[in-house]
Amino acid sequence: MWSRRRGLLRPLGCGVEELRCRRREREAALRKARREQQLVSKRLLRDEATEEAEGGCVVVILGEAEIQEFLRLAQRGIEEKERERALVSLRRGLQHPETQQIFIRLEGSIRTLVGLLTSNQALLQLEAARCLHELSHSEQSAVAEACLPATSYLLTYLSSHSSDFIELCLYTLGNLIVESEAVRRQLLPQGIVPALAACIQLRPGLYSPPAHTATVTTRPKAEPWGSCGVCLVPSLHHLQVNNALLITQGALTTLGLLLLDLAAAVQRTKNAGLELLVCPVVRCLSNLLTEAAAETVGGAVHLRDERVVAGLFILLQFFLQEQPSLLPEGLWLLNNLTANSPSFCTSLISLDLIEPLLHLLSVSNVVSVLVLTVLCNVAEKGPAYCQHLWPGLLLPTLLDTLALSDTEVVGQSLELLQLLFLYRPGAAQAFLQQSGLQALQRHEEVAQLQDRVHALQQTALHG
Image (cartoon, rainbow, N blue to C red; front, side, top):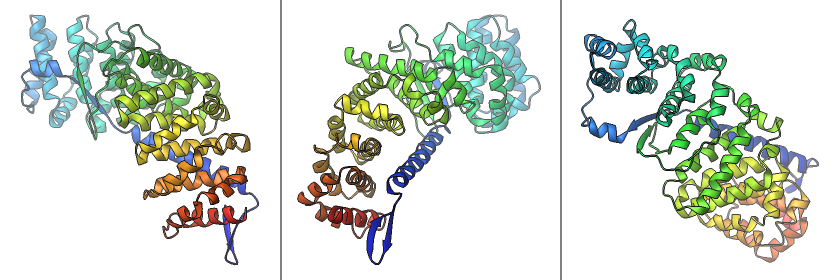
């Protein structure tokens, strides 16, 4: 953007468009990297009550003979309880990687498990699904690929009447998708996209807390999720098969409606744990908005601009009060909404949300960077948008952020000032009058910031 010649810094002729292009490329790369980082973990769903009832037994490695005996009892046991106990014992053994390897090498083992999954006895079906879920959590792709014969049935059961069973099938599919390209190739013709689109439709009792408490152990860290979130996270957050097709199936519209309903729910209830439903909706929507298909289908139209922005700010306030650590999730969604959409930027302005955004700068450095990035998205849209940023609280606030030592926060502040001076030259003079040069001088020796600091100094002094 800026070139040195004879000791002076001056803007290049293509300044505005080059600045826009660089910002868009950098933001697109950042959004892609964040989405891909989120999509690599598996999740393990275990019912705490069930684990306690089983006495927290130490997991032991099962040999071939023991596995065959448990499968025989599960198939041909005299009483249903005996059959169920055999599957419980098998499931516990399958928590050990060595047992998993022995199991998949044993001829007919997966076929027997699939047979039990498709039986007409609900308890046996559930335990067979739990066994498959343990296998799906393996770090070995061979174990995931051994589960291929079960995928069509797991998809079928997504239309089950049991929320627990749907939850388990979704988690299992999500884990298999992450691990194996072969599974991803098989699921697409089997109809995974329409099945997942159906899973994110609004359901009665969406906001009721689940009767059981499930612990979801992730790699690298653990997260608890509510039942609605469980349906969304494996469906969209893990799915890397064809997000573009998912978008054309109406996922943006459905998630937008879910976000609005959740915003209404947090206003009328103090229900603890509601953030566990909000977070996956926000995260899934953020991920889908990074897809080129979202722009192609007109994401702004599908998301009903102003209502979604208003709903998102209700959720940001909810995060601030109940779970501040989730604020970056909401702000990342706001960043993705405003990055390429003048209409969402217009909504921020028309709803008078610039000042509430500025108030979030005091929360943390991570939050500050995201807030400043959103404001850059607004400023980048041109003079008509920048006139709503200055005059106002923005310049005094940026002087405060320039006093911080965090390089990323300062860098994003400099970028915002650069855009503001570009489109509102009067802001540069106001900046000088408020001791702006002294604020910039603090960062003259910081290697990552030098060019931008010098460019801003020249702009402020010479216009």
